[in-house]
Length: 344
Image (cartoon, rainbow, N blue to C red; front, top):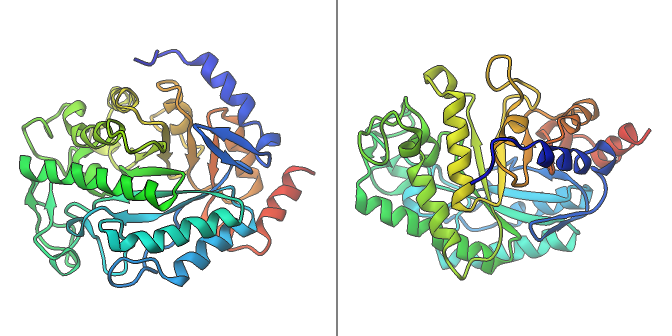
């Protein structure tokens, strides 16, 4: 179990994430990247109606890699039709998705970047027209007029959902992805389970205990890590800013990180509204806080949209990758712009 004192680990990361190293090649968890700039998902509706990769998807991610992004994370791909959030969402639920995903991975790698894909289940945040059945969630939920009332998942659903994530991870590896990322935020299923507001269960997948609310995520991670056919690293994407008002405490975050670390998460990807925002009153930013509870590599993410903010994020000494804001990628020759401003 990770120690609660990570000063040596943070010092090591501090050396790694020094601003001068952002544009240099590095290797973490077997992932060899030309630099520490990460392009997170910026589109989510360019697949065809069957969830297959289109030429537009390949062009988009190849362009980001060609311009300088060292690591690409592909948009959330549904692991089962039941978990599809909308039409034209990318899919990884069936063998028919493999050919396009292989072409996508090959295209990005030809540009010199590494590539991961985010695996997701929408849970209650979908509609019957999108997912083909009544949505399923931790509780009976309705996210609004564009969605349908969900039913509460049962043990049979849990087993099926976990297996869908495992099979999706296998397809990701077969397609040539360098890593996978489990979507534990964006109010998708695993995030719904983690929320006191959205999860009203009183069994092992709910209640006031964080270890219960994170149990489905642990089942997913454990099952993937225990599958001999899956060798690529696993990243876990999470946030807390939308849970604090509902009573999410520092001890909940600490427990969640420890449990996920023990389950085998290889990389943590905490999402903040702003990378430098304090995650709890008078405490550290989320990435820096998280680094105290795990030795695993970290992706810092949260409105990093300028050279100045990139430099500030690097001073935290907690990040291995820097996820840049969409507005940076909209700028012509954005990579040269960042490098020129920082290497001045």
